[in-house]
Image (cartoon, rainbow, N blue to C red; front, side, top):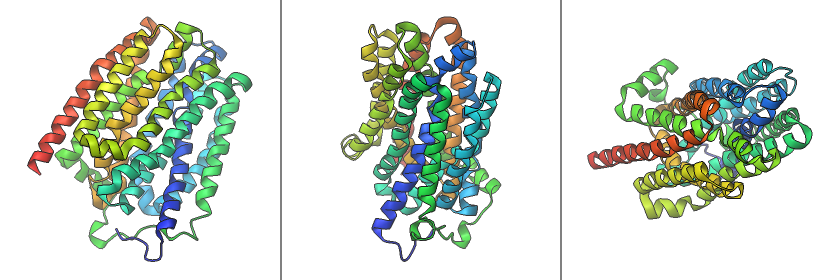
Length: 401
């Protein structure tokens, strides 16, 4: 890849900020369903497990569509396509607000997912293109602060706005957020050199199938993608049901639930601000193992919390601990195939959300029968094992290097 000859550092920062704004809109959409599940279940007279179909309906195409993000980014340019994806999502998400049955809402969430799915992986790949590897983990974490704060906004909006104005109004707000992000980035496409497609060298040009074959043939790439699938299944298979659990056990209002769930985003943003110190102090092995411990303790705390007031702190710890592990994997994902970075990061992100949809579907069987507490305990047991596996593999790779 080559960088713009006329672009300044200030213009580069602006381009990254605007891509982070698009990631904010994607994050808003991604977690918006969690606090809405109890409301939607009541409105359509369904169980929470049945209503969770809207989560799976979004997560599956979201994961699958990310596999094609690299192709779209190479064809149209990463910044250009992200602007288009935001504007397209603004239109499609209105179908959710107009849904009259749970089936219609499930289908509407399904068609909303593909465009929104491509935003974050292309943003990550863009950072990989323009930021050197030694600074990439810090910049990536701060870019992803956009997605994290979007998650906070989505979770708060799902609870507070949904509680006062109904869950349909939340999707109208989401459409406005997507439109604002898309228009903001579109205004820079001609004036900012860093938003233009970067030139690929002749030897880096390849096709989608060829890129994925190279990804699948490399043992290290296979490990990173498989680890991404496992973290999605374990973490989000439990996290999705926190809202329903707080409502069932403590009778919390939807507004309060939304504020409590927003703790995840707060913990994530705290990690983004602390990432430089953590990387320097712990190293990537320490980050992974520390994330394994923090998440396990947080899920155990949620399973045994006697008062709802203690839940927000545990949820914030989940956000902090999750990104300690996830950000380390993300950084390696941006370097799996430098010559096909968009495809490599898209494969990584696709695996994460396919894993999440698998975890949500499997956990639904337990939630409808025994509640969410056994699911939290299961995640607390499995997450440290994942962290140990990742850390040992990283150690072996470093030793060989």
